[in-house]
Length: 238
Length: 87
Image (cartoon, rainbow over all chains, first blue to last red; front, top):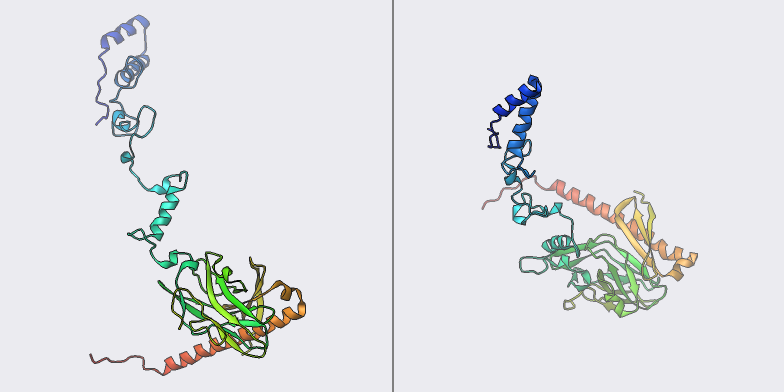
């Protein structure tokens, strides 16, 4: 069934006159018939396209095809979009799409962080599961961090052993940076300045130890050992 | 069983300290980072002395890991394959 329901104007009388006057062949007459037919069902006198016509291959009239397009050629409403997948959109100023996706992943239905692993480690309470994590033998200036596990609110994260060499005996705070709570092997760092413990968003404090030549010491963990202070954050020393 | 340790990575940290990663038997799970201040790193004798003990520690830890795993497998082998629970 034709989409365009318009009928051509009967022009047999005119065509017969043309054939008689001009001596047109059958093919030439057919060409005129097709020309008149196309004009009648597609075009208005002013040259505009009739709304009942259709784009070749489409099953709806062109007035339906364009009903949701305004005079500037723009879609008149986002309600008239079939595929609302925002993956097809280019992100705008301020990256609202990217930001929205991050918010969806990081926040819960109460607009709070879904879990503390979505926060920065420097702000997350954590407690070592060992009573001590730091040790020094009183002979070497190096402090050993034994492999240990940290208890965070959403779960535990294990860290490999490591070591730091202050270069001399004395007090040192030992920490590491693990912004994504990845765990495993981390490069431990040391400082004699307390403020460095909170100088980076991804920072976790292992503990403090004061090493003494000739005397073995321990530190860190939940107890602080024999010569130091505990690590972690936001819990009562054990 | 012989264990071989090697330094597989170095890192200059943003506080100026230098860290080296010691690995045993090419097994990344054994990675042990040792951090030194730049003045220890700059002195070959101090650097060698500082790092050497942790080559040993890393190898010992790996040996202990292997032994623990082997002991666990032995324990599992002696357990009954199934057990009936009268509940």
